[in-house]
Length: 517
Ligand code: XMP
Image (cartoon, rainbow, N blue to C red; front, side, top):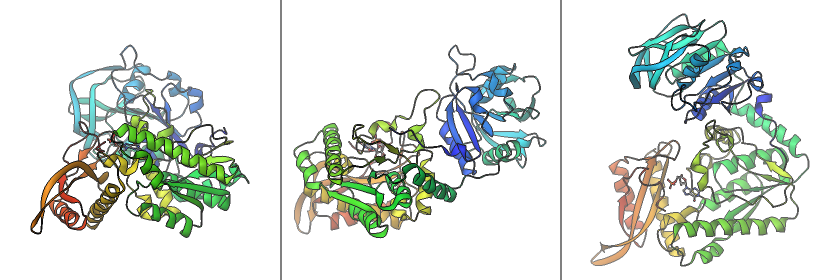
């Protein structure tokens, strides 16, 4: 297969985050990009000579102590490249340790908000008054390396920051990348613009324009096939390729009949009608429901849907004749290899929509492989994709199948679609759509008694689920206002036949998962 296209680092001023493990690397890179400077992530063992090309280097935090036998450490050569370095937390200790300073337990570990004072002469702390920083450490720098001075202090951490401005080496014991550090963004801004001399040339408008031109060059007059799911990644990827090559792109949209109410029509309306994209919609609902008849085990449901999806896609692709390239909505977090070798686990779910590798394509087109999710959304808006699709909350590949506990029948699918649509409408009316990470309705498979008019009824119990989350690995149940719950419940039992009772799920993840199956 073709190799991934030229990365923006060859065209933009770029910083690099050296990842020493933990979960900080992506957050730091996103903060840098928010400040309009392109930023990549590399593992801590990256060859130092290859780091010369960057405008600056950031070291992440990480687990453990620099003195541990298997502690992640970079080559000391990194400090003599002439490229500015900012070490954060564990990264600060790595810098101190490798340059001849000392790291030791601080005596009083600091975790959380800590009042910190800054040396006003420091470039890193220009326009930063005494304020709160977010600390999370047992160890600290106890003796400065030669050439360094302390540039920030807190009650239990006399060297909360250190610097050698001559060599442009800076280090902070706290985390400037988290929102709890009041002036964290100003500090990163100072590092980028005052220390590294960046100009700020990373903007989504110019990304979209440049990417369309680049795709035109990469693809030439070859034909591209894209699997469109209606999710933001595949939608934006397809849109960029469409702008580049027009009718030489064909999208296949497999509607497995387990989408939310009216969702398939929205996708078709937007891409085929408004944007005039070459799109095949395969209405395979009956076929999928046929395969799922009588199946109640969640993993079996997933497997059946995953396999059937591939089969339908292959059949439709075969009807289209030869296609040279496959377009995929891969994004940067899918690509990054974590320094600690522990890439995000969330991908293990993505078992639907994944296509086999042997479909005979010459190569891949992956226009989003350098972008984070929020950047993908901004590109989507630039390209004129409606907000309903750009801000669509994550939706599992197997769709409503994993929200219908027990057997999936056409009636239960339509009951759930109607109830879920009411819940979404009420959340939108309350203006909470973007505040809640994910929210949906579940048919619990439990029947319960109700009274309708003068008679008893016996119907389905429906659960509402809403969670706040940033990474979907952990989540808190969302404290939904009672009025929203009340209105939703009232409407559902009145408007959706077959539902007699509505309950709200107040379980966090862990121990529960977000989905019920
Ligand atoms: P859980 O339920 O594991 O979900 O807490 C975490 C996130 O993953 C989504 N999810 C899936 N996505 N195929 C997918 O593409 C799946 O089989 C699947 N199961 C869960 C879920 O919606 C949530 O965003």
